[in-house]
Amino acid sequence: MAATEIDVKYVAHLARLTLSPEEEQKIGAQLGNILGYIEKLRELDVSEVQPTAHAVPLINVMRPDEVRPSLPTEEALRNAPAKANGLFLVPKIVE
Amino acid sequence: MEYETVIGLETHVQLKTKSKMWCGCANEFGAPPNTNVCPVCLGMPGVLPVANEEGLRLTTLTGYLLNCSVPRFAKFDRKNYFYPDAPKNYQITQYDKPSTVSGYVDFEFNGGISRVRITRAHLEEDVGKNFHFDRNSGVDFNRAGVPLLEIVSEPDITSADMAYEYLNALKDILIYGGVSDCDMEKGMVRCDVNVSVRPVGQKELGAKIEIKNMNSFSGVRKALEYEIPRQIAVVSKGGKLSQETRRWDDVAGITETMRTKEQAHDYRYFPEPDLMPFEPTEAWLEDVSKRVVELPLARKQRFMSAYQLPASDAQTFVWDVPLGTYFEQAVTGAKNPKAVANWVINNLRAKLAETQTALADTKVKPSSIPELVALVDSGKISGKIAQDVFAEMFATGEAPAKIVEAKGLAQVSDTGAIEKLCDEAIAANSKTVEDYKSGKVAALNSLKGQVMKLSKGKANPALVGEILEKKLKS
Image 1: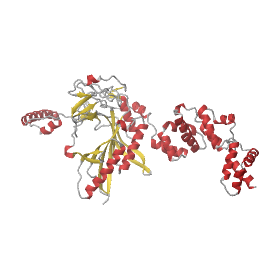
Image 2: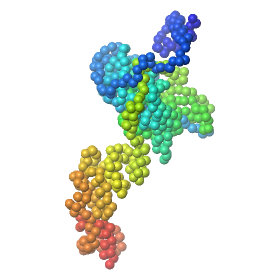
Image 3: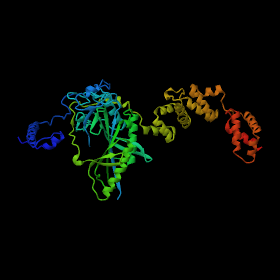
């Protein structure tokens, strides 16, 4: 099975992953295999099948506009690596 | 060479719901940080969003207000990117199947009516708010998950002023429709601008520059007033612009490069597997369409044509909807709509403000206003007495005719009675009479005032003038 061409560096950057050259090699090959496996689906004739946005045949799932209790701030921040004054602290945002 | 400007706007507006779009946390401005948050809007693993029906209704309603068509199938997608204010690392939005498409906004501009076409208005979610400190940043997720409408215009805008007027018209429509409070101070409206320039007559568009970070409509105008000449200067010197995103620096009053095309985001949109498609039924749409209101411009034009009001009066009734509704009740069947408008705008509104009374609580019945106008127009009472009658109407809610009768305020047009008062005034003001006779025409007004005073304001002023003049000349 021919490994599908894939820009591992770019994909890793989109996922904010730092990969060593060895890992790029290894993961690139694995991703290629996965995509190659998915390619198998092309063998299926879907010309008669309507495209769908969802596998479950459900539509219009809604809730009424009612306020429900939120989490206590302390609880909301419990897993935060850093916090101060009720805020989640993150590395300085620069853009 | 002459250049023309092509501008398109993406306007983000928070919808006026009680709760957030995908969870039951309050949609509320100004709460202490991270108090309106839950596992759903914090993007914790294993949670599922459920669509707020009112958010979908307000989206559809906006579509109707902006003359859009509302497709019978809409779905949600994930827009993937990493940023600390996006807790899920994606934003739920509508990519290829938005809730509303192809509309337009008409608005007054340059003495005429301009139209900007709307590409689409789609529903998405707001993100958290960042606070920047010296060493790090802080994030408050109270705003994350608040329903946000992105209204995308076609590139129909040709100047900074036109962009400004379009935004104001859009805001008025959304406030009118009850879709959003559009409070700029609270960040309820935010705007991105796409702007390019090209030589007049050229078909292809110039390089599209996006400007971000404008938090007021005047900021948008200022940014464009800076950016348009900048682009023209580059191009006219033979330079080349390339597609980029620029940031507006409000303090410095300039735009600066934020990222170029090469650094553009790759959002990898894909269908949101956690949300089902939305296929509104006929009955559901019918229900929403009942909430469609008359738009500000249409209302203004109607008030001008139906009641022959000047633009300024009509505009007053556009800004103050309850006052306009009151006027419409008052003006039914009235012969003199302009006078009715004057009383409502100049007197009623002033009295309400003075006494800090809400219009809904006023004792003055709408039908009393045209009655009062008719009393003045028929000469039954003078304009000055009408003011006193109105004050009484405002205090008691009594009908004007009754007040005039009970207080004996009817204008005296009885020549005999007025002649007597004139004689009295002439006798008591010999100096003024001398002045008049020696050529001081203004002295007549003083005498007229004396007669009116003697009549307690009830004498017919025109008649008083006539009789005085006759007497003095004889």
